[in-house]
Amino acid sequence: MKKYDVKDSRLSKLGRGRVAWADSHMPVLAKIRARFGKEKPLRGKLIAACLHVTSETANLVRTLVAGGAEVFLCASNPLSTQDDIAATLVTDYGVSVFAIRGASRNLYYNHIESTLASKPHITIDDGADLVNLVHSKYHKLAHNIIAGMEETTTGVIRLRAMDKAHKLLYPMFAVNDATVKYLFDNRYGTGQSTVDGIIRATNILFAGKVIVVGGYGWCGRGFAMRARGLGARIIVTEVNPLRALEAVMDGFDVMPMNEAAKKGDIFCTLTGDINVIRGEHFKLMKNGAVVANSGHFNVELNLVELAKMARKVKTDIRPNVEQYILKNGKSIFVLGQGRLVNLACAEGHPATVMDMSFATQSLVAEYAVKNGTRLSSKVYPVPTEIENWIATLKLDSLGMKIDKLTDEQAKYLSSWSEGT
Image (cartoon, rainbow, N blue to C red; front, side):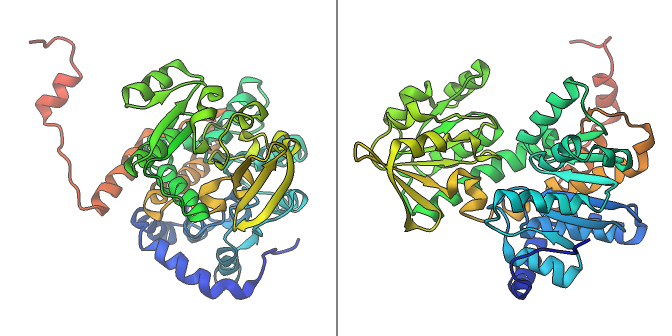
């Protein structure tokens, strides 16, 4: 089995410093790593991980290795790999990494297959591409897998569909649905990093711009909040009436995409669904409209239809910016090839918020090893005790303390007999 495939192992010096910087902002994960180093709860286990290869991910991998696991890592998106981080994981930590930024579709899936060649006991996914490959092509590997974890909304949607169809071959934990994940990672992490990606790619001033937010889930909420904070006017598009109503109550305009398309200066999809912005919408956009996606897969933008509408595509405008010149002379600018704009055009979520998400991944891996024989092939929530423990540690790292219920208060909350 090939041990690794990275762009250039000589990039490790730069990556080493970035991993250390991220680690200094991930105190909860550091505490778990220290305990794992003593107790070795993952001793002898092989872990196949399909994740964004970033400095924060590197610290998750270090934690799993400290726990006694051997980790095989590949990218979960062709444009999310940070090549210097991949290099330092190989060179300084001896991890088998298969990830190169800008990988072709074939190479991307070859890398996933390389991680699966380890015959893992645990899978960790961001988008469910690895899990999907197990179920579609390598189903015999499932007999060896104790459990898996899924990090993102798109992946959990796929897993729940598999669960509903009784197609899951091994237990999966919906890490994305953990409160310590979606309330912070999705809202604050995606909110800030999406703004960061758009600004790095374009250097556009948000103040005064009309920004169309496709989807008002936790990621959409976060982006809308941060964009408004920079002075933008926000339009939200939704298919869910409750989320649409919430957006209205939060002070945003809500309308269908075919109306928003005429008004927006910047568009960003954050839904986890396909073809949110289509040819019919591109036709209505202003000259110079900027279009981005912050959902996991680039399918949220129908770039095939856009390409058919264009008489020319220019890629030398700015890094990560493509100009589609339509047959009527109008230009539309697409960021990061329609892939995750926060990772394709920036560095992804800040380490402070990924601290909680990756602490959750680490502890769920430990939980799976300890409880694997009692688990059936379905989607499980993250145990509440893990979430509470992580939130408590995070508050402690921020120097914050909270109250405790008195015995009288605890009794009142558990009783039905006491009233006014």
